[in-house]
Image (cartoon, rainbow, N blue to C red; front, side):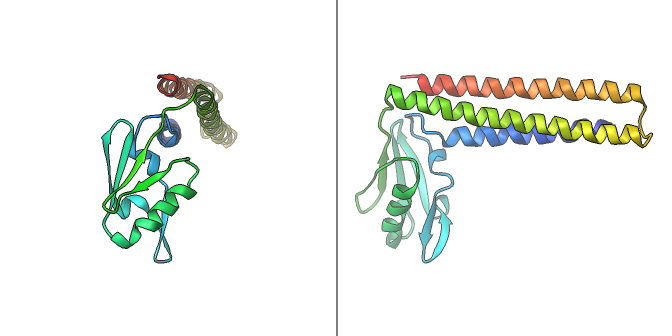
Length: 184
């Protein structure tokens, strides 16, 4: 019974970590190396993660600096950033690639909040699915006489409390992200 709760806690925690990762990739008008995570550069015919080809630094709050280790990769990195759905324009000066993060318009901020809300709802659905899986497992155990009906009810209550706790955490993470996005 404790293993069911621990397994659920781990799975719900992973769901929150996934939500956090999605939020880091949302552009908020502030420079962050997390924006470039997931960008793959076609490097000699192999899709290679950008962070494995260059050092990425944040010289100020509105600029990302990329310093490729191979000078031949400049054009490939430029192309990969332009093809990404981030809407960023890299500037190549021959030594570094700089990306200036423009301030967000009010309209774009509202769009980003909607996207963040969608990510949060998906995480909540994931958490509820984990709860459903746990309840199904517990009902099977009760049917097979591995646990009593009273134990089933108690554990289902514990699973519901855990679910409520993680849904509240997802809402807190969303509220913080919404505040960050709407901040001018």
